[in-house]
Length: 64
Image 1 (cartoon, one colour):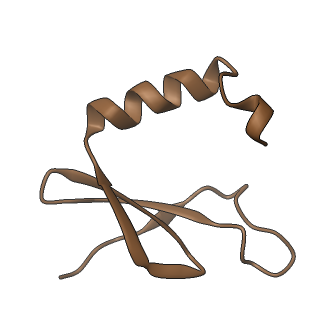
Image 2 (cartoon, one colour):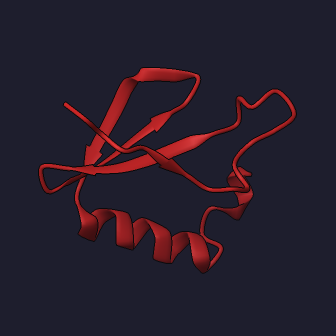
Image 3 (cartoon, one colour):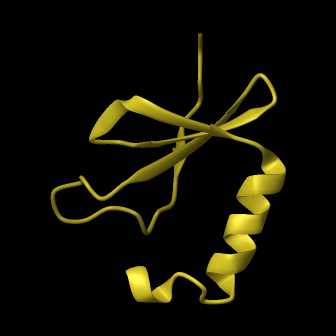
């Protein structure tokens, strides 16, 4: 299975361990942390869009 993982250019720290990666495979959106690549979250485009819209509106700012 050849999955092309992508990450934001802003998602790295000095050690390179602050990365969240996304990919698309078989119609699903996959998400993982680069320092723990064996744990993969599967979601849909609609759920990811809802999350990203909420993030853009600041709904999760208190967690960062």
